[in-house]
Image 1 (cartoon, rainbow, N blue to C red):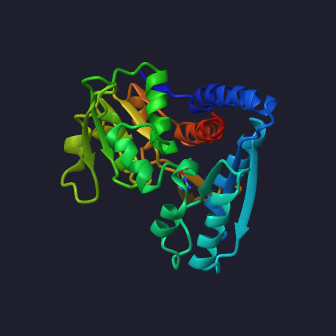
Image 2: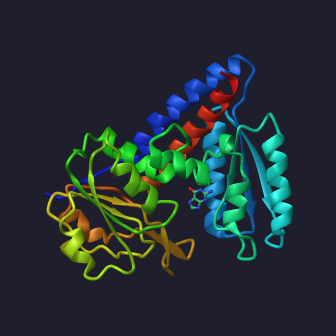
Amino acid sequence: MPAVLIDGKAIGLKIREGAKARTAVLRERGIVPCLAVVLAGEDPASLSYVSAKERALAEAGMESRDIRLPASTTEAELLALIAELNRDEKVHGILVQLPLPAHIAEDRVITAIDPAKDVDGFHPVSVGNMVLGRPGFLPCTPFGVLTLLRELHIPLAGAHAVVVGRSNIVGKPLANLLTRKDVNATVTICHTGTKDLARFTREADILIAAAGKPALIKPDMIKKGAAVIDVGVNRVPDSTAKKGYRLCGDVDPAAVEQAGYITPVPGGVGPMTIAMLLQNVVQAAERRTI
Ligand code: GUN
């Protein structure tokens, strides 16, 4: 039997409805949750992510402060902008879309954001809080993956989760969240230095592909019936497609015959990332008004 396709759009919509309802409560008190969205340069994928985020914010009744900067923006200029947004009482959250142009140190920019406005959960304070299990903003994609698994009642306690990829945005935080006591999965992290990747992935009850390599995970690398979460969003050139490319996940589409559950690309993890962002923004606005 082919895998159950996980509808991230539908589950994300449910989360977005919750964020919308909480926004309505704040609006009645004259508070409009506001996210400053900073995009430096014109990376086409980033442009598309940023507009999707802004559309979702508007749809939930939130505001976005859309800040587009040229790729030539200096690090000092960006840091000055962040300082200004940190001081701005009307701005509840700050999102700097990554990657930044190569001449800007991402690390310094992320660290400049006030942790109280760090709705991406990338600031070292947010990362520290997450690792210690203290309240704080969780990064949107790992939080979205965890929410998907929970919403589908996929057993996590005692399960073996294999995370392929160790990025700061997905792999590292997701591995951490899955080992939390209230989740209780056993986690293996694989990466570019892993020898014989398939040996590990075949052992996974839950396989999370977040390597950024198109179709890296082949059907024979998956245990029959496993839950497969594909975080990859790769643009693969395709002359037959209208845009000249198509989106391809990190999992070979033929894996649908082997997995028990699988997330499609697009329509799986992507919509969850946006939903969790909205949830974090409304939470940032609520926290400031308590
Ligand atoms: N680039 C890729 N994913 C993300 C994300 O979740 N947040 C930001 N700010 N940039 C990204």
